[in-house]
Image (cartoon, rainbow, N blue to C red):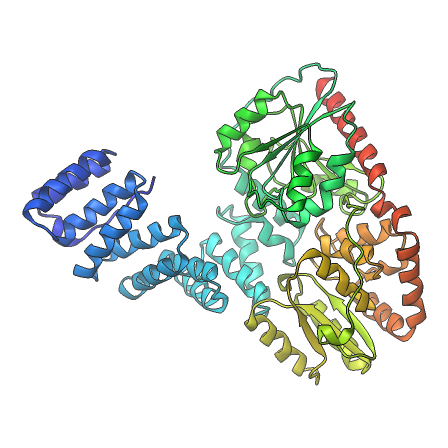
Amino acid sequence: MIHAPADRAKNTRNAAVPDLIAALLQAGRAVDAEAQCRMALKTKPGQPDLLFLLAQALAAQGQLLHAEKTLDKALSRAPKVVAGWMLAGTLADHLGNAERSTKAWGQVTRLAPSSGAWFNLGNAQRRLGKQAQAAQSYEKAHLADPQDATILSALIGRRQALCQWDGLDVLTRRLETLIDAGKPGIQPFRLLALDMGQGYHLKAAQTAASIFPKHPRPLITKKERPVIGYVSADFHTHATAWLMAEVFELHDRQAFETHAFSTGQNDNSAVRRRLEAAFDQFHSLQNATDQEIATEISRFNVDILVDLKGYTRDGRLGVFGLRPAPVQVSWIGYPGTTGVDFIDYVIGDRWVLPMEDQPFYTEKIIQLPNSYQCNDRKRPIPQALSRNAYGLPADGMVLACFNAPYKYGPAVFDVWMRLLAARPNTHLWLMGGEDEAEKALLARAKGFGLKGRITFARHVPLEEHLARHGTVDLVLDTLPYNAHTTGSDALWMGCPVLTCPGDSFAARVGASLVSAAELPDLIVKDLAAYEATALELIDTPQRLQDYRTHLETNRLKLPLFDTPTLVRDLEEAYRTMLCTVSS
């Protein structure tokens, strides 16, 4: 149900019929309000104030398209009514029409600019793909209300995506102040790529978690096969599905009963069909509410419920907040604490979750013996095209990073530029983003005297993405948010990865992967060592070739890709969790 904006056209305030209709809407009697509107419109057809009220009544009943058509008529007759444009923007947002939303909120900012109007305009522009304009709108929203943490975190997120780094450290410190003040509205995921301590990650997550009501933990019911449930919106063509498919297939079905609770789309892809066959039962719940999903989970007496999303897009922590299972676990999807008291465990390893980090986690840390990250050994091993086909020079050394641009950051990018400047035979291949991001990176490169030695890659299907690693000599990791799936992709394809661990889960994943690939000398202590080691590797191509031979020859023997052992270790961890809770 959509609620209309609180204010409405001034010329309705002193009219008895409109006031009656407004009172009915305020009382939640939308059907009666609609009837009164239609009756009044018979004597005053096309009256703008009545059309605005009718649109509100229709919207309150969920008749969004009808409300939108009615609102268009009203706005054509009274185009300066702010509340009408606000409702138009709200309706467009709910209907997923970013173009209409951009127009509506743009009108609001012209007629009555406010932090909320600029923020909503920025959201619409972002969905429309106008990222630079979105960043500008968020900037205006922040200037209008510097204490709004939601606006500030959105501004920082756009700045990172566009590689607009000037002043980012100042905004980050400002965000830390708002976190310390307990300001709500910060998306914890946005903090993972920022240079701030884990204490802020925890505080922000706990503030975000405060919306969830408390529910009692259900008792474990004794059964021959404990039931494990996995909740995710990514059971389709998605990185999480590619990582985890074989884990689900290799579960000991004699010892455990497995269920998938899919809250995302069914894209009818090969990986979706594979996942559907991998579980004892696969439940498609894309349009279900949190309560409906929790009820379904409870119906099957799930003992261990695993969240594969956390605070990432389309996460459903609200389902876990209803406490449908006695043991609830965070794994793979979110590299940090959820800050909630209803997730009992978080699964990591000695690299990403050393035990001394326990004070920064509301969940109890469980360490797997090798990397926490699972991998699918059925991933293809395609052959690369020629370098020319990718727009790369035929000669010299290709350094690459296929992480999303929001992970780059100025410190790491400047190291890359110094490498290129010091070694003229090198070329850098980066994952591209927005045109504005690429322009910003090229402008910064120009400051180092570099031109024409950076190529931008595009998002392509998995097999094409894997294939291009065959042209790469060395992958350079990012900090403070490392490569995750992109890191294991590179190692799977025999491409060495140089990584520098930082001070959080997200900043140590590279070390976890490289260690499990048995290449410990590619894990360095700081950015100075990262730069020095990269130069050494560029100067000794045979060493890089030896790494590639090691990865290709031992691919299925390496702990990183030993999925059967990981599954046994995971199941042992599940048994420990069950024993701890039931004892």
